[in-house]
Image: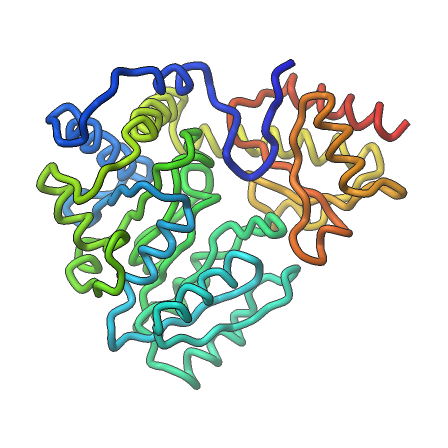
Length: 357
């Protein structure tokens, strides 16, 4: 029985992407590899129809967190200051990255169930600035909340700050208006909404931001990576087969209709899960209009602990995800990324029926 991953990455692969991992071994100093790298970088910009004269997609072998670390450590200048909007585990991670590198920062803390409080963010910008950058997680998978980039970006514009976006769990499925939100860069990964495999991550950055980058880190130095990749080079040995898979996943993404089609596909599956669980007495944690289409959180059924739910569903071919921290006692999470269809969700709901009986 095939096991479907309903966790927030890695995802269930299409047969086409899985087969791409069987392509020939390739030295990363050969022209064929640079062709692969060039195609990946161009296709990443095309996801949001970005102009290559203004934007650069910079690849690296890392997890999504590696891309976020590279973005924060590189793009906040040495004399800059960062404001972190924190309403979940991954916002906390950005704060910890800033602390690790000795970057001047302030954090606006929220309860994990809260949306960003614009009044408090603006008050911090006014009282503790100037800030060169504001960092936010677009889709905070702690709860499945989709944070409002446009309104945060408007505050950034009014205060002369650029927005750094953790788009690890939203890139390729949720709308990002790079100009309207005053974005300097978005960090993301292959193995979530793009349906690639772990090991390939990237930062899409404004060229002007790369020109002003600091070099706090060695392996994750974004400016050096960008410069060498633009010259058809690479400083280190990348995960070649993960790049094969990323390119194949991006080709498939385009052939299936791109960003709008992927958003619509996820939205339909997420609503199928939400309505199906609601009819079985399992409530959503957040209203649909505050949630991403990528992942949503649900209250644990009465009398069933997470371990019982997880193990029972896994025996029937589905891997769900626990809540984080104290939320593990209250909720579980289901993502609809990857090679999943409506018939799979029908089977999932049937699996819930058998467990709850």
